[in-house]
Length: 94
Image (cartoon, rainbow, N blue to C red; front, side):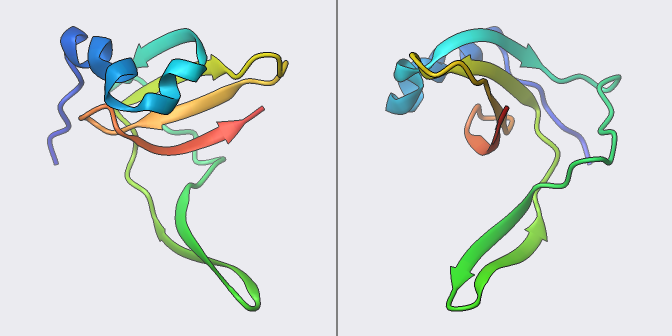
């Protein structure tokens, strides 16, 4: 499978594409390249809720981009994982 990385113009459109991004204080935008290999220590899966709790679904594809951001006044960081069209596919809060 060939993965395209977002162009600089696509990254610049990120804050206009999704309104919520404008609320983030963005610290870094990173285009993930072939040398950025997943460690395998974290798995992101599509999930859903039912009466018994969270049901784990299929594993999400590897992201093509990463945004490190905050939602002030919170001191924690969000890692926003993006597909090749700069759409958020998942996030992690640290």
